[in-house]
Length: 337
Image (cartoon, rainbow, N blue to C red):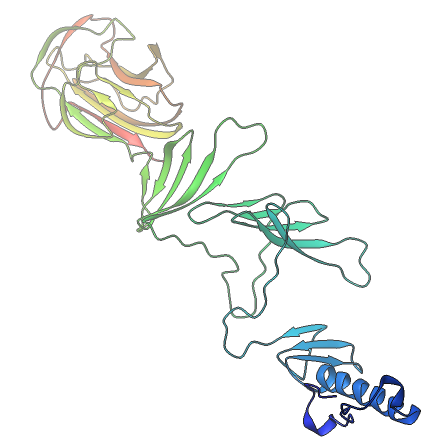
């Protein structure tokens, strides 16, 4: 009979029209069987595309020298192997080590890529333009010569990491935006450090104010009345109000303020000055003696939303005149840390 085996082993005796099944000799039947076995062995063991390496217990497809349990080599196609499943959505490959008591699966779920150690989903890469979802921890270990074990890149002007614990109702976002480092909570920007290392959010709040004109009969006995420095020279962050003479603290921290006042109500009328914080007198350093010019500098820790002004006391004189002078009557300060 004819075969599709290589001609070098096609040693079957072809039957003639007068031959019957019983006419083949016993020895010829053995020879034909041996030829068939040799042909199968040649096709599987020595010929591509399928090769079985009995000695190393490996199978090669497209290669005669498999170096793994299953080695697929495609000389032309970009995709060397394809696995299909009849499951409605899942197509998984399962692996298990020799000493392992559990398995790990990797595959697809619809259009997503899923990773399932212990048959529980731990990572999912959604279809395009969706985030990677990880259940568990991510550990990145650098290699010699590489100090960046984890690198995140986007094709937009911002790259962000979103963090949210089980008890949170909103997320914390940390990332970069046009070379700036940003931190957001509750969808609001709370901190920004620019590419030069400057803290720009919260704003580096600072103000400088003077009197626009002389104020007559100002009541210095009202110990919580703030001097109305109404002419605003600088107001970075817009935290100072010229109409009230009060500075509103934008963020908790240490603040430094300098204040000075010139009065024409007597050469020794001004005796003390102090901060007025949230409508109350606060501890304030008092330096120097009495005079018609008084001033000082103080550093104080304040909470967000606190209001700060300054009061000058004229030793019980009562009403005094506040002289407008850019050199002697001013109030300035802001956040230092």
